[in-house]
Length: 141
Image (tube, rainbow, N blue to C red; front, side, top):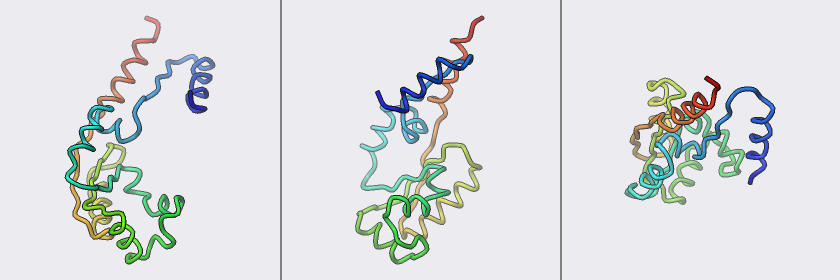
């Protein structure tokens, strides 16, 4: 059991409201669960750089943090990195946390900078709704 799970279990004991833990990562949650995430990865026709809402808005910052780029404004360095990593496209996975028009703009901007075609993939809130329903069902009547 990870530290974060232990911390959530402690929190659940201390608070007087239901606590549910999403068992999928951010991509799996947005795609509908583990099986849908696996199918998404298997069915992609080549390496794809997936941008969810958070990554689309903050990829420059994250690439500096993980030391993938020295200068997130150096378009040539960015394109060289993506070519080296053999990405063939950028796939947008809007999680619904930002306006669709804003996400589309960020996806298009990323596509132009990375010099890769883009496509947008549908998302679902099914996993979050299921978690919410579990929390509601655990409330006393």
